[in-house]
Length: 267
Image (tube, rainbow, N blue to C red; front, top):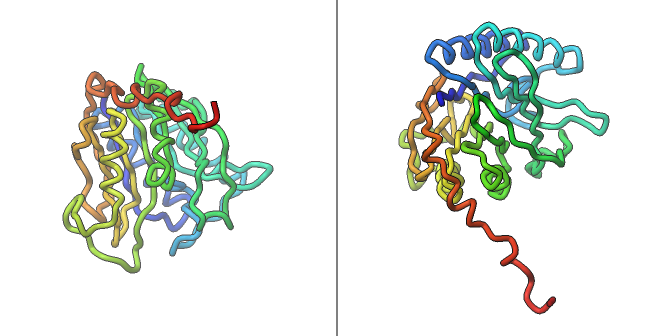
């Protein structure tokens, strides 16, 4: 399967963000991609960061979904779009999955939200697998994949060959300029990517914004835990890679034995 990981810069308007999505979908499709994943909450932007979040109500969400559905049909490519889900209890960080005919297959919410996100969002409470062209995959959003590895294993034990990980780390205004992927003195994020793959024997595809002071690269990790490819820090673009689903055996995830975790002394 050919997958694409899209890394756009922060959008200053909904129309600019949509233009970036259209361009990256087109570029990925031209390179043979079957599915394209975008970063966490890309439209309207992740709240609580050091950039302005775009106005985003039901009418703006509907406009976004109509546009992206049109482009997935036009370019014959599926999409995982980081956005917000507007609910009666509040805003949720979510990814919406569309197939290559523009049909919404479903939503994955962020269920383990970071403490800093509590003022802006409410967590979701369900998980699901998706399937495109016969390949099953899951989605674990940012904080979930970094600090709650069970969110990735949930998909792996149910047959996912790859887990997509839309996220945001870094800033356009301050921070360190990273130069080496996975360096010992860099933030822990890229090491965590390796572990999510290695501990489950599946692919792990982590997708960031393009930021001047990026703290993690948009990266594809192979089932061995090795970095297969990544986009240079700070560069807007799309990473198109082939995955060999036969190598994503889920061997280690399949050996997970929850019955061995009973608390002693309670028999």
